[in-house]
Amino acid sequence: MGRARRAGSARTALACGLLTAAAVAVFCLALSRGDMSVPLRDVLSALAGGGDTGTRYVVLDLRLPRALTGLLVGLALGMSGAVFQSLLRNPLASPDVIGVTQGAGTAAVLASLVLKAGGFALSAAALAGALVTAAVMYLLARRGGVAGSRLVLIGIGVGAGLASVTSYVMTTAQVTEAQDALLWLTGSLNGVSLDAMWPLLAALAVLLPLTLLVARPLGALRLGDDTAAGLGVGVERSRTALLACAVALAGVATAAAGPVAFVAFVAGPVARRLVPAGASALLPAALTGGLLVLCADYAAQHLLWSSQFPVGVVTSLIGAPYLLWLLARSSHGAFR
Image 1 (tube, rainbow, N blue to C red):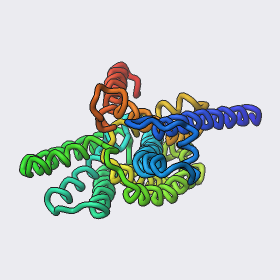
Image 2 (cartoon, rainbow, N blue to C red; image 1 turned 135 degrees about the vertical axis):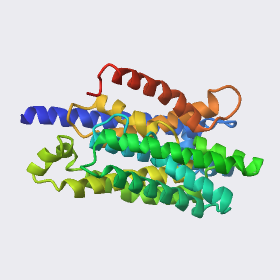
Image 3 (tube, helix red, strand yellow; image 1 turned 180 degrees about the horizontal axis):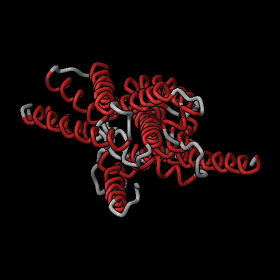
Image 4 (tube, rainbow, N blue to C red; image 1 turned 30 degrees about the vertical axis):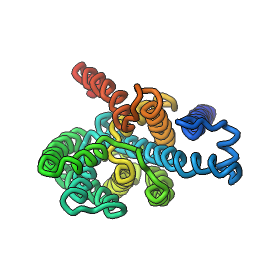
């Protein structure tokens, strides 16, 4: 038993190490490539405070905020999706499928187009929208215990209603304002600045370790409410704390870059294939999400024709076929 546990821990550590190394490599590539290519040694020199003024401007002012924001957004969405899917025992239960990020997007669109808010107020509105939407879904699904399938169905319904509100607000807005809102709703890192990155970094410095801390009972919760209660777990308290952390992670990520689709949905299942069965996949899922967003944003900037696409376009190209495949499996009893 002890040998198996040590082997599982070693495999998880190896997976995290490989994902970290890959994320660092893509991160450095993102800082190096662009209209002006910068050799890797000059990138490292600029990050250390050296190099000439032009190189520091390109690396630190133009490229670093975008790459670091993409990494942080991916970390947040990856861990959020893994918590939802593990806690509710349903592969469809990710914040972008069940309406949490839709709530953030609707709140941000209302704040931007109706209240003319911007900057920090816009980000705060997106976070508040995610939290309120999740609270409404939880209250609706709570009767008789929160079941994964029931919460997913309620979330899809709530998300559809919020999408209609978003569409109505955008169709009644000025064309230029609606275009800006549509770009944000796609999920974009274009124009991200250091001012927008620091609040996200501060929030994740608290939320990521807090989520890992409150996720200790997650293994017991996956066995079912009765079994978890028999093992001494405060089921409702632990579930509420985990859901609150997962919603906050999705909310701050959406506030920073818009609702980047399918990252939370895909990261968890990929990470769980890299670790032993039954092992916690939260940290590997976060690293997978960070790597996915970095790769998608690099492809959006440099690999898709001649125009720069929002990162959400590329993640949707990856996630949509996976969702269709998952739904096809479910029709053959894969979720039973």
